[in-house]
Each structure stands twice: as C-alpha cells, then as structure tokens.
Image (cartoon, rainbow, N blue to C red):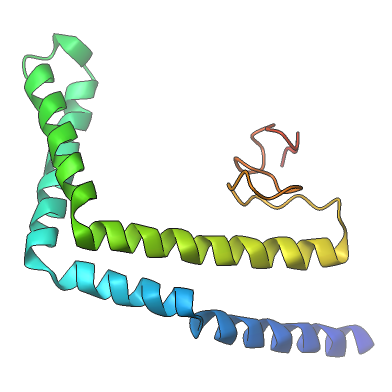
Length: 146
C-alpha cells in the first residue's frame, strides 16, 4: 500500500510539473507562434506548396537522376523549402519550438540525474554533458543501446 501512495505522490508532482511547463513562457510563446503560423494565409500557402512538391520529390527520388523531372523537381523543392524556412512566421515557430524543446530537455536531465548520474537521457542536444545525443539505440557518444 505504501508503494501505491508513493506512486500517487509522484504522479501528483508530475501533474504539477506539467502545469508549470504548460504555463511557462516557452510554452506560451510556442502556442502563440503556432497559432500565428497556422492563421497566416501566405504562410499556409508556402507550406502547402512545399508539402505538395515534397510528395512529387519523393516519387522522383525513387528513380534518381534518371527521372525526366529530376532537375526541375530538385530545384523546385529547394526553392520552396528556402521560401518556407525564410517565412517570418515559420522562423518564429521553429525558434519557439527549439526553446520549448530545450526546456523539456533540461527538465528530463534534472529528473534523471536526481535518480542517478549514470542515467542516459536522449535529448538530441550535444550541450548536455551526460545526455545521450542522437537518441537511444544509436550507439552514439554515450554508447547506449535500447
């Protein structure tokens, strides 16, 4: 029974942490940038064009340079990706996404290292000392495998 009570306490604390994350500046900024990106018609048109061309690009890649539209599609996908990436709403969204991910990575490292310094955390961020960058199972710098 004690284990059940401890579990409930841990889950309550986890709920508190989730609430703090959702109310954080990073999460608020992320949601705002996502909303702005989704509500801007010009940005959505750039995204739509890129996704459409990406589908065509994947078809062309099956045949590689032997496909008759290889050059045109390859150039078009690069141009559309650049236009989409340079869009101010997409750029702001990606920046906010990175900041929120960094917060989540920091929290994961703090929680895991409070249990043991030897726990590997797949942050994907090379700036965390004992974190597993590249995802578990990659055999990366931490040599972990799941």
